[in-house]
Amino acid sequence: MTDPKWKKSIAITGAGSGFGEALALRYAAAGWNVAVTDIDEQRARRTHVAIEHFDGRHFFMQLDITKADHWQQLQDTVEQQWGGLEVLVNNAGVASAGNVEETSMEDWRWVLDIDLMGVVRGCHQFAGMMKRQQAGHIVNVSSFAGLAGLPFVASYGVAKAGVVALSEALRLEMQPHGVGVTVACPAFVKTGLMDSFRSTKPGTRAKVTKWMEASGVSAEQVAEAIAEAVSRNTFLLLTHPQTRAAWRWKRWFPERYYKMLAKRTAG
Image 1 (cartoon, helix red, strand yellow):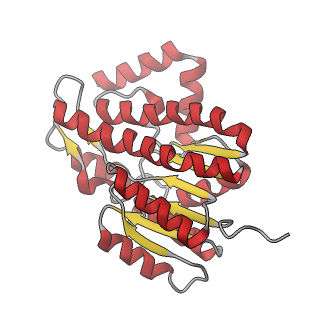
Image 2: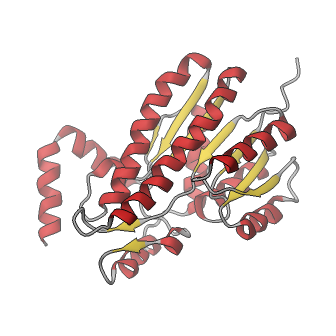
């Protein structure tokens, strides 16, 4: 029995740069069909050009993850091209910094609509298709900020924590239908995330950029870790060694973890 056409097909949001671009290149090199989507059509086109020489029925399109009609267009194109979808990666997002008091309501809405509701829209759009297939995998890219309870990244952390909670619920809902779910929680990596960065404090952009440059983990390494998590049906993916240690510390010794963060914040 031959595999259906949708086998080895992947759709990636935010694939014009960073993790999304690295994932597109990684999967195309492995012989997968890749749907390259990005809010910036020119960036999506550049990634598509970079994977064209790999075998596969690739396509690109502009996708604003806050717009339902864009999601519908992606689903329609996926069905026309491949008849279904094996992996969806909800990767597109933005970044912000600021405390609860100083972050404007406009910025709260902006971050939540993209980083949380953008992922919700993707899951909502493709869950039914994967249930009908009785197979597939959804990857939601969160952040360690969604687990860590860090101060001064309030809106970003809340959005990313919501992605973790969404993924936990989705995992249970999809398991009876043979569909896997992974939530990836990377820390600092050099990507294009700072292009749309918003902050209430001067100098934060330079500080975060420095941390990204010095992280020691590349977008390509994160992409490989995500691909491995999909193949193994791993749920929670922590891509940085230091975050794996911090996550254990928070779960096992929550008050000590809080005091450690409080001391660092005061310093």
